Image 1 (cartoon, rainbow, N blue to C red):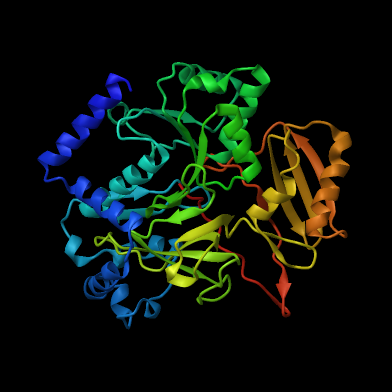
Image 2 (image 1 turned 60 degrees about the vertical axis):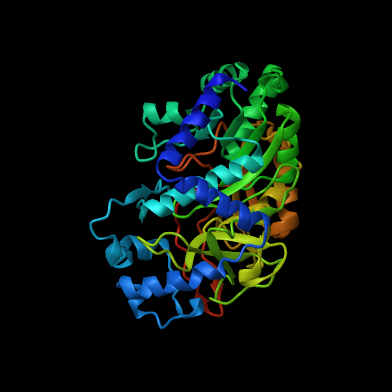
Length: 443
């Protein structure tokens, strides 16, 4: 361990102690609940009562049970921002966070000081499970729009080395390799697409990534096929974990090294997993909407918040779930097979996993049986038939699929490349289905 991380760690906890140890206390509480028997119910009722008494929006809820509260969405928070603010936060110095707004307008969320400290403690707790301690150097690959960029003094204090993934060409990858070669970076955090592109670059150039000294790679907010995780582990010689988080609530779930199930952050959030077309609990094993109640943001209560994500519960159903089998991706990132059944991002990963040499892809649906596949990193046109045959096994043998080989897949404003794009709305029961709200991806 180098002097820099140790000094940062000592300074961080000394400063926290001088303020009464609020972050340390939250961290101890999170450890107790996550490693013992988390009981989020004890935080839920006071939050619901507070929301009814102090916010214009929730004052209309019948209460006191959470099922009597409406499911909320990003659009509701955007258009009725002041109605969600608690009267107790008037004049308070709130911490405001803004999403990247990758598809549409950004969303602004106000946080109380206690919620801010809770989020920091959540991050510390999960980072520790990854092997990343306070003060350890972190290389962070993501899109860095102005509202998310960290000032230089903050980067130095937190020991963060940021790299922009939008326009991540060979020059940027070479710079990342030089940074990692210094053996002073403990962990690397980034989108799945950026991590896989970097791994491929390292393999093609013949670099020995084992010599970098990385302890863990954290895949953030994008689904990754297990085969891709194992490949990254082989290339870099370290564990690869998944972190599921958003700007609005913080860390929602994560895997531990050597485990592919996502453990829910039940110490800080109340979770519901609802059916795609109804506000009713979905059974385990089937894709469900991820609906979150933040137990600590009293300044701007976020109750029954539909994140726009789909997930599959691994164990118990409803609010008693503790682990997720997988994140299915954004609800907006869904296409349909020729019979009208939904195909999610995770299914697309399974469809394409055997083509290890391709860098990335995007499948666009233009009609009930019309699709266009864009492939980056495999310019052999003779292979188009292999892609078509593989996709038809899932989409239907009557699927008409054209293939286009491109240099790269376009990024959204958040720096992510969408695997699935649907430009078609199926008709069901004689009526056209309302298209899902397209919104920003997590992070």
